[in-house]
Image 1 (tube, rainbow, N blue to C red):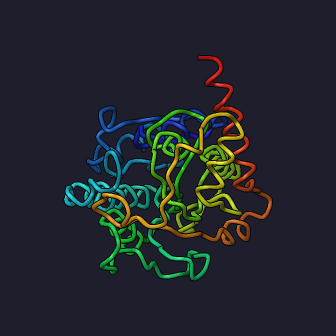
Image 2: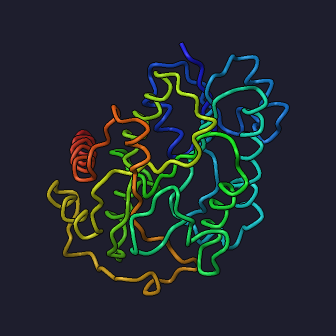
Length: 289
């Protein structure tokens, strides 16, 4: 079986570890493996015959990206410096590198943004969040690997990082249309990459979102259909300025045309289909408690 190394035991890393089942997964947190040290990482890759390295580690801030405004040095280290070092190690060892990143480097609804569009909510933009700046800066400096951009990820499982749990928990919500990523679909895609022995180090950026995105109110209405929320208790606002936040937020729609062109035999369900699947499982899980 193919040996795959997943770095970072956060929200996305745990989901990949749970769902990648046709490969031999090495799932490592920083405590398990000091992948910040290139020598340590390279020895582990070589000693374990690793074919794919998937970096799910990074700094998003807790409870949200506002913390990135305060911890800029740490944010830069974890979102730029360390991923570049990992990419460099993979390149030197001829190992496939997949970097899980963010599509929060665009803002506005002038168009659906493709991978060819220059970010307008990134490193060079005064109005962007520091988190978004670091995500864009990595792409500027990186020249190896597959960088998968996800947005507002969700799963059936409870997590303070889960978009669905945020909608259920928060009283005030911003009603915007945004692309979102169903993590089981992302995991299926990465499994597809591994199963087909696809070389990733010359792909560059790739938007991975579920097509036909919905606005926040529409998603809340769907959650209510499953009996998991009472929409009458939610207050909707139109701009982030209405909330007490330190960093601006990205609101946009990403185009996944590159994904469909490169891999026409891989299909991604629509956002509504993904929500139905996630919420059915979420309701089933809540009923078993």
